[in-house]
Image (cartoon, rainbow, N blue to C red; front, side, top):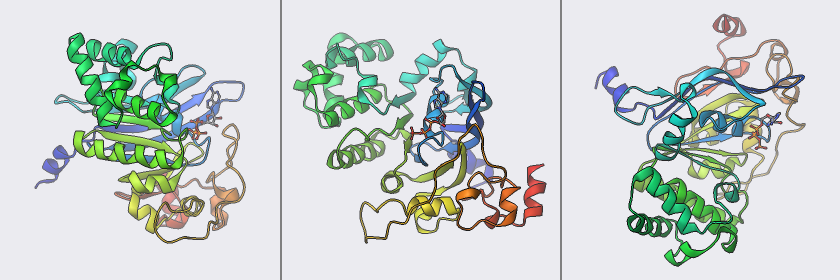
Length: 340
Ligand SMILES: Nc1ncnc2c1ncn2[C@@H]1O[C@H](COP(=O)(O)OP(=O)(O)OP(=O)(O)O)[C@@H](O)[C@H]1O
């Protein structure tokens, strides 16, 4: 197949380029800086990193759900699920976006209660979405709602329940079912399993991966828990202080992490399965995004730093596997010339 042909068949459903977001204030918070990644149809991309590294801010910026003081200062978010040319989500009005949000791009928040209306029965919430966005009749919408709940293992009798009458795990699964109601091309998931216990977490993740296989949607999955991502993600992007520092196939990132931060993060979590490993972790804490260190932001905590790390910020280099670390750049002179 020609290069063009190959590219045509794997056109990304999401192509984030140079995205930067600040939280305005006396000293602006540079929450996300120059972040680029693509998500292919049906792929699960995991975003991992410690608390505060900018994972949630990226998802809100993609879905245009961030509100002041958050401000997207640069970049584009090309969304290309349909036949026509991709659209830049950042250039759309809120009205244009709200149609896309349900029908093409769905969001599952950290807390299920944010997405479900606490004073409305599940059936009403599903029926409203299906009637508005899919044009179904009331009875067809009810039937589809029962099917959708069945898909995530919730009996149809629960349609009559209010959200607070469900367990945490059931609420979270109902939220996922609601997100899938309009058969979106991509689902943005922000720590969808933090509020549930480990057994339920595993069940929910199994359902997400199974549904992805059956329905073919792509997922951007945000979590600080790298061992969890290794179980479900095809590719992983590791974030530190608002930037992606390493990105590649999940299995490669786990087997052979290149960036010292990725190594530390991997060794901070026990594997969900497989042999037990000593948990080593990373000393210190992430920097204040109002006052980022010079050079590589990770250098004050890096066990492998060299002198140049304090002065030169390494760009994210590579093709299938990307790393932003001087130790993995050709030479520091070349790094400087790439940055210009
Ligand atoms: N409304 C806000 N005003 C000012 N700064 C904010 C605001 N919301 C988030 N931030 C800052 O932006 C940075 C990125 O936050 P974000 O929530 O995106 O990180 P995260 O990686 O998703 O963290 P967590 O895992 O804790 O959710 C953090 O330093 C955070 O303190």
